[in-house]
Image (cartoon, rainbow, N blue to C red; front, top):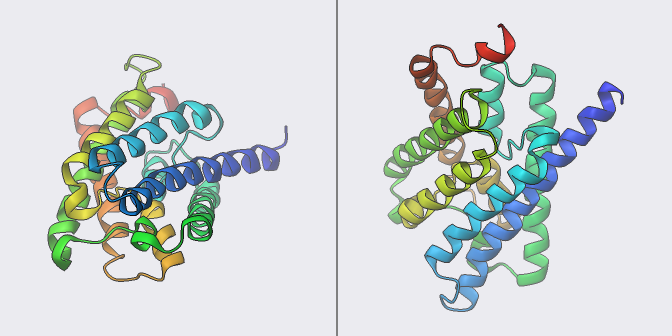
Length: 229
């Protein structure tokens, strides 16, 4: 298969995976509002974690299952992902998320701002700090369970999905527990909600880069194992 065909398959996998994440995750937020809490906050958290785990197992062998522009930038910074794939991956992720939000708008209406994330009481600084920390923890789990060759094989999806679900359960009521610019921007774009959305880009990107730096210290440059051994 040609390099172009491979890249198309990978970008499509990123688009499909992020579509599933946004459609089911923010869809659960919307349905919970529509049904006056039948899904529940813990139910929404479970949906986010479960769909992330499922998409990692479904598409990880194709594209690496980044499903997150901040993670893609992190993978590029440690030379796991080549530079020429970064922009196509991010475009695929955003496209999949936006399509999911558009279909949710058509199917369910503009309920709960399509599941867009907002800081509690407009406290953007609180949410910026929390989103940075949440994404730091998530990326640390991704690096430790998914990229370090010393990690047990086959458990990355479970570890990452559990992390997403637990962090959503813990901090979702405060920030929305996005940890993912595509997850936040997609519903914000379709619902025309721009207030404080910058923090859902800056926080995750900062958190990922901090995790990359910390894990390098913890693991003695783990990323060299597969690329420079």
